[in-house]
Structure formats: structure tokens, C-alpha cells
Length: 211
Image 1: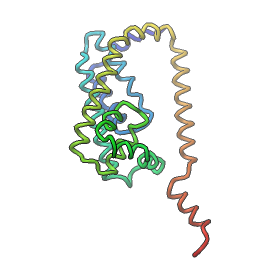
Image 2: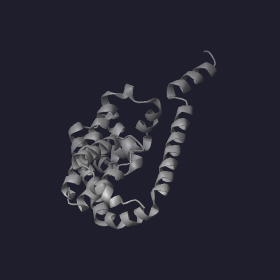
Image 3: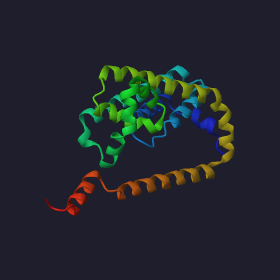
């Protein structure tokens, strides 16, 4: 049996704060598949051990998520040529663009929490040249709500979950990690097999009759 509480309590607070900032920066930038809940759960262990505080956990998580959202916006607005081809469909999501036009502030706030909206709204807001000052403000509000609510819930109830996780044992956790790795590998292989928009356009031009 693994003692998760003892392991979490032994983590270095500075290292965990930096890790929390980094992972939530990537999540906030719109990169799919980032397990943002993991550093927040680890923060619960430090808070429970008296090595950190709820306020510090919310601060570092919010800062990372917010600055990440600004970075994602900047890429969508000024760095579109650097975005991988298979991400352009996310950035050009018609539903996200419609939501941005109709309910801009609410959509930006909600995109910090709703994973299906995060990537298309973050990149799409930049591509649509949504006003930067307004985006900075609403993404900060969304990040604070997203991290604050999640971190509070994990702090409030997370210590009750840890004993059950300890009973699971290292073998099952390793099995879960292996399954997650296989799922990520399968997704990566599937994305590589999908033709890029440029390749599809070239293929269509080859098959189109000459004028």
C-alpha cells in the first residue's frame, strides 16, 4: 500500500508551485490533454501538511491558467503560421466563433472551465482579433473562477479521497498510467494519419478538372 499523504506532504512547496504554474499555463493556452487537476490535488496534500495554503494554491494555479490563456490568444492572433495543421480545425470552430460573437465575455469566462471550448475559444479569440484588454480581463475572471472553485472543492473533499486511493495500490495506479499512455499514443497516431488541410487542398486540386 502506498502512503499518498506522506508522499504529498514530502513534496517541496516551491517545486510544486512551479509545476502547478507550468501545467496550468499549458492547459490555459489551450493545449489538449493537460492533467491540470493533478497539481491541484498535490496542493491539497501540502495544505493538509501545513506547508502551503489554499490562497497560495489558487494564486499559482490562476496565474498559470491566465497567462497561458493570453499566450494562446497571442498565438491565435499573431502566430497562426506556427500552429500545427490539425489544430486549425479547432481554431476555426464555427460554433466557438458564433459563441464569441454573440456572448463574448461569457464565452471567454466559460472557456476556462469547459474543456471543449478552451482550445477553440482561446485560439479563435486571437484569430478573430477580439479586443485584447477585454480578453485579458475576462480570461482572468474565468481563470480565477475555474481554479478557485476546483481547488476549493479538492481542498474540501480531497483529503477524504486520498485514503481510498492509497488502498488501490501501486499496481493499479501503474496500470492506469499505462492505459493513459496507450490512449495518448493512439490519439497521436490517429492525428498523424489525418491529412492536413494543405494536403487535402492539394489532393482536391489534383482531381479537379482543368478549366
